[in-house]
Length: 116
Image (cartoon, rainbow, N blue to C red; front, side, top):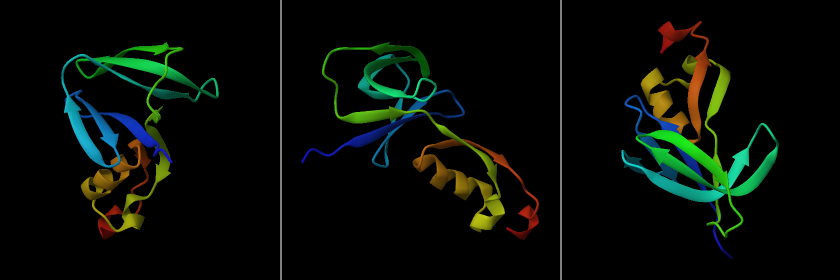
């Protein structure tokens, strides 16, 4: 059985695109394309597509009829309400773990942050 991989595109502080393939990082600064099954959340569909990235920013997303690798390209997740202190981690350690699971931003409620 063919294994499916999941691809997450994450923008870091210096606008460099970071791709997470099964917890392996690849940092890219040049122009390149990635193909796979693009997850379109707004239109509630998944389609074979090619994403072109230039200088760390998405340049284009194009639907294709060609065969693509068996990997899914997902948007980053924004956690709308989190209490980081409940994880018993410092914010920087929480971020290291959360980004591996596709979370690219949080709206944090630090009501007990002094406890960490």
